[in-house]
Image 1 (tube, rainbow, N blue to C red):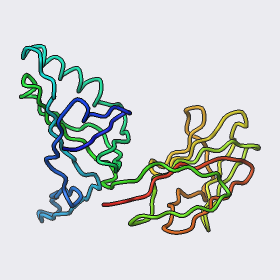
Image 2 (cartoon, rainbow, N blue to C red):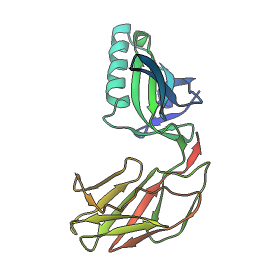
Image 3 (cartoon, helix red, strand yellow):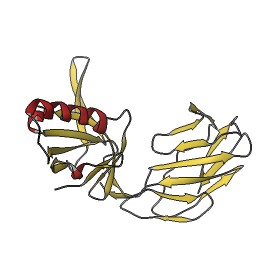
Length: 228
């Protein structure tokens, strides 16, 4: 039986959970095009991977109609999210979103759900360090799963990681700025920020890292890649 935690809800408290499928490889789609009456094929690889679980409700002291309604509401309110979220599976974490639901057995208190693991990787617990402080990243590869939050002291705050930097232009000094390394977004008060043309969304390297703030203070929250 597996332990699955979504939005701080431990599903194993209420359900017996079995994992049906987790592919080793990323998804690939084969496309065909015709040019000058000659067919050609090309492949596009999507890093995301589907993770499928079957949930069986432990306490089924209700009639089949009530049980069906209960399962439908549970999926709609507890498993569905607007955006990808962190899901813990047996102590590891995936950044995923509900992708498919097989609901034919809901009247029996059973449902099979598929979550799409967007990066196709498994991560560790979230860690946080102050900018300007050296920290070590472990795991199996470099990580892009980091969110930097800075409080600017001028309108052009900057963070530097080795030979790469991210510089924000025309920033407000009255609110924090969020730099999402995975989603490649820089926002302030909910709006996209203007960044310098030479800015880069850098990765966190295996081993030693130090993100240096200029004209700002802040922190980075990050996760290490534990498995692919």
